[in-house]
Image (cartoon, rainbow, N blue to C red; front, side, top):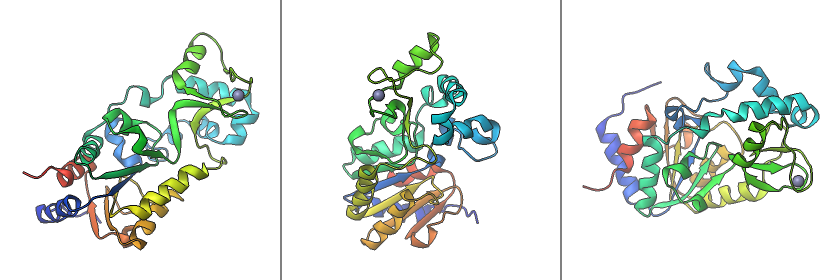
Length: 257
Ligand SMILES: [Zn+2]
C-alpha cells in the first residue's frame, strides 16, 4: 500500500546514510522513468507497444533471423537513451559519491544514465549490460554503439563485426543469453562489503541482481528500499520508503546543513 512519506522517516534514513561509509546503490527501471526511458512491460512499455522489439530481445531469434536484426538496428537509431537526460534521482546518487559514501552502483538499467549524471564509471556495475556499446557475438570485440549506428545510417542494414564479420548486437544481456559471471560476482561482492544497501526503483524480482539485497542483509547492512510500489524484498528492508523516487532520494542524501 502507498503511504505518505513523513518527514520523520526521511530524517531517520538521512541519518543512516550520513553514518554510512560504504553505500551500495541498486537501481532498476523506476529511477529512469522520470528521464523518459520506458520500462519493458508496463502499459507504455517497449514490448507492450512493439512486440517486434520483444522478439529482437530474444537471443535465438536475433542470431537466426536477419530480418529481426535489421528491425533491431532500425529501432536502435531512435533508442530513447541517446537523448535522455539524468533526473533528480540520478543526481542524488552523484551527491552520495561526492560525499565519499558511495561504494558502488549495481544497476539493472542499460541506459548509461548514472555515468551521464556524473558518477565514476568505475563504480557502475551494469549487470544487464549497456546500449552504449556493441559486442560481437563471435569474437566479443566491443566498440562504441555510435560507430555501428553511423554504418546503419549510411545504408548497412545489419552491420557485421569489423574484426571477424560476426553478428553484432548491443552489449546488453538478451533473453536466453547468459549473464557475465565476473560482473555478477562483483555485484555480490560489493553487496557483501557494504554497510548500507539502497535499492531504488526496482521491483527486486529479477535474479540474480535482486540477490544483492539478502546478501547485504546477511552481512549486517541496513537495507533502504525506495520504490513507487511494493517489492519482492520488502521483508529485508530496515527502512521502506514508498513514493516518488525523484522526491525521496534527493531528500535522504541531502548534505548536512
Ligand atoms: Zn567479431
